[in-house]
Image 1 (cartoon, rainbow, N blue to C red):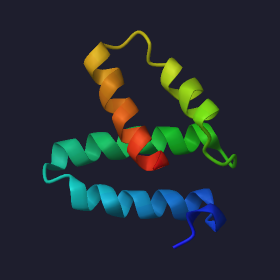
Image 2 (cartoon, helix red, strand yellow; image 1 turned 60 degrees about the vertical axis):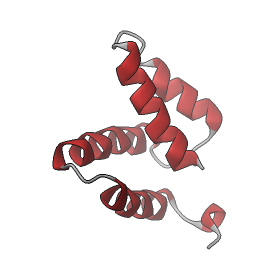
Image 3 (tube, rainbow, N blue to C red; image 1 turned 135 degrees about the horizontal axis):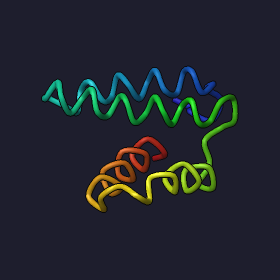
Image 4 (tube, rainbow, N blue to C red; image 1 turned 135 degrees about the vertical axis):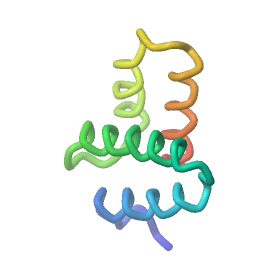
Length: 80
């Protein structure tokens, strides 16, 4: 599947399906979906790039390091 030709809407739909497969806990799934939804809103219509990921994650500097690490891993997995 060539993901480079997919729209953001399609990419995030596919990722949400992947999240549903990865997370067994409803609480963890809801948290992951919340973070990915905020990232999708942050992007608007722009394609996801490393620069935009850094910009998105930088807004969470004031949160606990473990929280920022979780967000970073989640977004990093999406970017793969």
